[in-house]
Image (cartoon, rainbow, N blue to C red; front, side, top):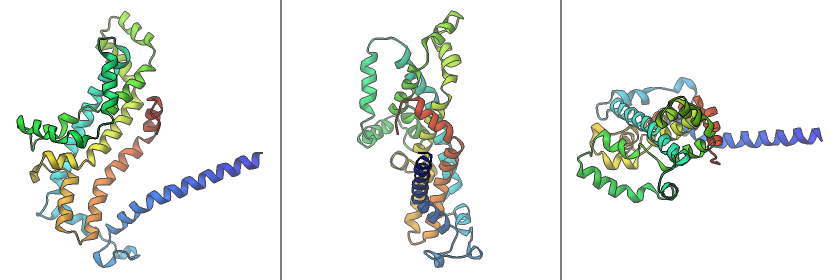
Length: 274
């Protein structure tokens, strides 16, 4: 019995390692190709043939402003994450713990909206941004995305599990409903908040359709949009394109590996199954 259990566990480990290898190989190829010259593409070149010229070119060529695009992406992503950490938990807490007219209807609207692809409402959003003069501004790239129905649902599921006694005790101590939320309930949601931050970071950092639609000024390009224009200029320079892919992907990998434990805990505590 013990031998069968160990064999099953070993088999599971082998399957997981094989799957990890399958998913890692494309990134490994991308990373390797970004350090070689065009002559060594699809060849196994030794380390003496590796070079960082592809990365240098991104930051030194006047034809495109990668540092500016990178800064724009950091600002846009940071604002979206900060807004998500404020608005979505408040909405989730209201749907979980407060009683008001139309609460159930609003909840089902939130759930239904989760099923609507954003591409379907992109044109109305563009028209609204144009009418208020926000095109080619950070406001257009951030304000419409400070809340997400998925995050509201996720936070609601977590706050439902918080005992009402905590809130009642805080109210007896003289805290208002907002005070109870920010000082008692909000700190308990560390794991789902980190999970939401990772999802918001990944979704915003790699977003292409929305930034390319709402900002067509090169000075307002974010990294993915700017790198796509580089791809159009150097579509035959595979190492340069791969260097751009690494630049856009590496921050997400670092962010995820730093908070992967909290990410898993947040998914579990929110009642969302992967």
